[in-house]
Length: 90
Length: 217
Image 1 (cartoon, rainbow over the protein chains, first blue to last red):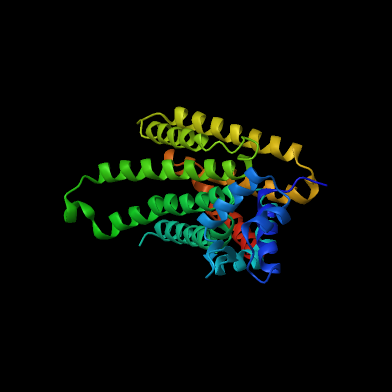
Image 2 (tube, chains in turn purple, cyan; image 1 turned 90 degrees about the horizontal axis):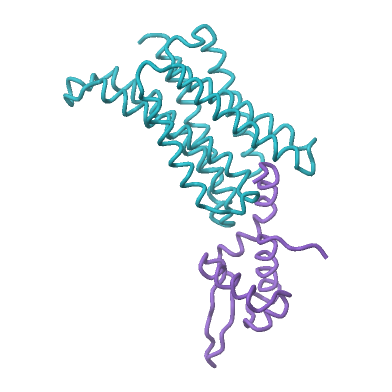
């Protein structure tokens, strides 16, 4: 298996959330992302900080993660982003 | 208006518009990805736009409105400040473009960008030294050779050379025409007879890059 790049990992995390009807708890998200806990925490915080995902607390005080509009847009534009980076060798 | 001034204004205007279209056209891709390469690529074109603004638009404003009478500021001082800003921003544009393709190789250390700012300030200060065309010429040639060597190294180590050769050719030409533009400003009567060809070639390079950007965004 080849090593995933940063953008690819972000896309994978966002895809997992979207494929779970846009609502998943952080622990199964960590498990499905196939990352170490420390690495996952870094990406998780970064995605929240960049407003690609958001945490929502349910009535029974459980935390769920949702994609924001920007998160959905990232997934839509992912191919364009990668093509652009490849085209200009960035 | 003097025809040369008219050509100068149109030339700068086209370069500024192309550069700003690249800058704003890639805004969403950067906001979504926060990719460092895209960040410096965009910055390069913003710096190009600012540099060309100082190159011609301010000169034109001085010529048109006669600032000396309006603001009572020496045109010599305005000229030197404008020249300093032009050389600083155009050097930063080239450094940013170089950094956008080199940041991974340089381990993403953002300290280098401060070094580039420092170098650009030094180059801009040196361009103000009067009666030293040889120094200006030598300095810019040296800068150009360093950039060409660095870009060539990346190209040589690239995996898919065939596909990427057109991009590197465009970058090399961009750096070359940037250099000629610097000489055009710094050294009086340098390549006067080729001015129009240099302008047209520079515009073609910017339009080519803009086309590549629009195709991919």
